[in-house]
Image (cartoon, rainbow, N blue to C red; front, side, top):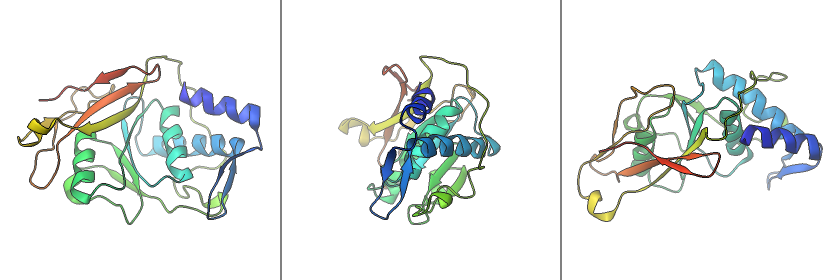
Length: 211
């Protein structure tokens, strides 16, 4: 649904501005959708497919939203991490989400304690040609994704109830294509336990299994 909405916006609004940043970058709806296609191809080359989790540890820049739609075009699930969290909390979120790939900036890059995943460093661009440079494959598109109204598109992580924060706990973020995904320990010293929920395109949410 999200991928189709982006494509429809590109068709209807074309060259109209979709993003205008304080740094002078302007992207049209057509550019945005094309870049999401190109980034989706790059993510697919990193092994991302339907049901896999892509972590987004980025500020509110166009690259964040392009990557979000790019993941949706592959049927992948995104887990956005609030960059205002302290390092230990950001690491705990990533451990709970258990992503295959994480897009982040050099300043926000997670520590080794966040888990094992492929890290893609993103430099917020001021020129359209530099947006997600190195990840995008200009002029390419991913294979069409079969429509599915209930396909999960995002994992939303929230703090565990106060009583549970005192205990060690683990959360499991399972991808639809990898039911054997390992649980991630989130109750380590200095970190706050997080609970993961998956959001579907229909607006309903599905709790991940955890203990």
